[in-house]
Amino acid sequence: MRQDKSEVIIIGAGPSGAVAAGLLRRAGRAVTLIEKEVFPRFCIGESLLPQSMAYIEAAGMLQDVVEAGFQFKNGAAFACDQKHAEFDFREKFTPGWGTTYQVQRGPFDKTLADAAVRMGADIRYRHEVVQADVSGEKPVLSIRPQDGEAYTLTGDFLLDASGYGRVLPRLLDLETPSELPVRHAIFTHIEDRIAQDANFDREKILISVHPQKRDVWYWLIPFSNGRSSLGVVGRREQFDARADMEQLRAWVMEAPNLAKLLEDARWDTPARHITGYSANVKALYGRHFALLGNATEFLDPVFSSGVTIAFKSADLAVKALLRQLSGEPVDWAEEYAQPLMTGVDTFRAFVNAWYDRRLQNIIFHPGKQPEIERMISAVLAGYAWDKENPFVARAERRLASLETACALTAD
View 1 (cartoon, helix red, strand yellow):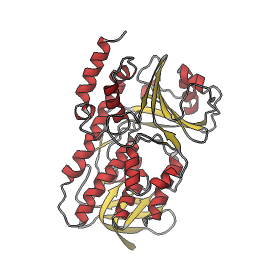
View 2 (cartoon, one colour):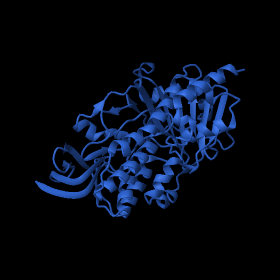
View 3 (cartoon, helix red, strand yellow):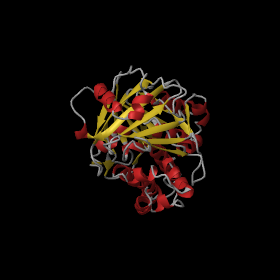
View 4 (cartoon, rainbow, N blue to C red):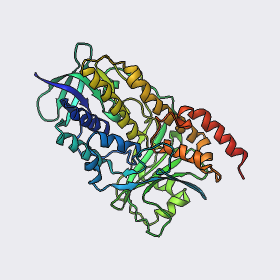
């Protein structure tokens, strides 16, 4: 069997893998990425957060993304029955990028991957990791190409950026159940045909809440080509055995604002679904490896945090890894796991508050104070690691006290 070697091996060429590769190549390190699929390929997680732009820039991929022509994004809009609220991410507590893009993930992920190749990374598409051994002095992967003979690949360190594939969590028995309830999502892409004079801002993602079932919500993410990503999320028991497209269209008809916006839409792409997408792991790193992005923990799509967490994990892991490869001692708990979980825990607090309606009550309250709105806007823009922000440093307590204050001043 052929035996290959590389300095750093990355499983997966999606956003976290590509950005990690870019960061490593800028530091002069050899990188091999093993990708099961061929790009471009369909994926959800299409509304980026402004915090993501800093990592794209640091990886040397900003020009590639800017020139790709994706839909400009400057905020988020929320709707529930007759209530409406907006957050402009340029008006936020934390300094940094205030704008980003809404992207079809097929071309976006390929843009990043192609940039990694341009920078000297070796990406092997249609190669599948079937076994991982991290017990020796160096990690060893057994790899099966779609066309060709199986081989082994040995490296000095291994980063798992396999996303929903969760390669190392599966192979190394690292998976553990998420504490979040099991939810179900149905989604598709449509030619939205939204009229230019409609009350709709294509520079913002629209999050709509079902007017009666407040734990059911919809996303509408407009792209630059007249198309949109559309999805509905709820508890599994709220869905039935009908075909995905039939259910999705029925749910949209129950949200008056969406039904009106999409009355002329062309539903030309088969709908898909995913159930029980929230996930967790027993450990974020080991002696020779670290988990990135959705291979670590996936919360919920409501605040589009997945890609931002993926980029943040890549940035933290590469910084620690570069020091380790240079012979310096690295405390992966202190330098990687703990800092990463600061932001994950912030997003988790916001997700929990969304589903128990506390955050919905805050968002739709008519009397939000500007400074508090800027703090919340910063988190929604992805700045969930800024401990100067009280809604990061004490997320649960601040959300609870703010919701109580909103209830006392309601109507």
